[in-house]
Every structure is written in C-alpha cells, then in structure tokens.
Length: 89
Image (tube, one colour):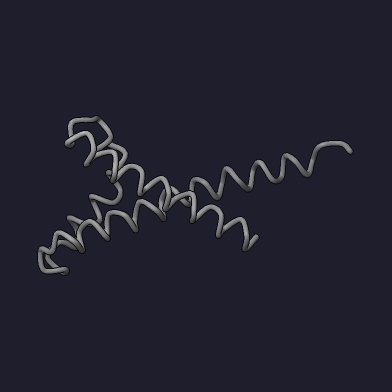
C-alpha cells in the first residue's frame, strides 16, 4: 500500500507540473485554468499568509494540485490493482 501511495503522489506531482508548464507555454490562453482550480483556490486562501509572494503562491498551487491529483491517481491505481488480483489465474 505504501508503494501505491508513493506512485500516486508521483503521478499527481507530474500532472501538476505538466499543467503549470502548459499554461506558461500557451501564454495562459488555454482552458486548462479550470484544472488548476484546487491549487489556485488554496493559493488565494493563503495569499496573505505568504506575504503576496508569487513564488510561494505558485508553490502552494503546485503542491495542492499534486495532492489532489495524487489522491485521484491513488484511487485509480488501487482499483486497478484490486481488479488485477481478482482475475482468474
């Protein structure tokens, strides 16, 4: 179970990184902003706590998105793992 969690968090970090890079490459003109919503909401919530730092805001956005997408990946990987175990040998 521990390895599944590590893999899921790595997948979440990768997805979060790709989404942040895609926005900068497309000059923020792509509709990916909806995918960034959990992290952006957290960054706005803690914006005053981090002193309006853009770097910390982006770091909060990346970390929250990595956790959110990692949780989804954890569920998917666990379901796939259970389905594979249930296959007849």
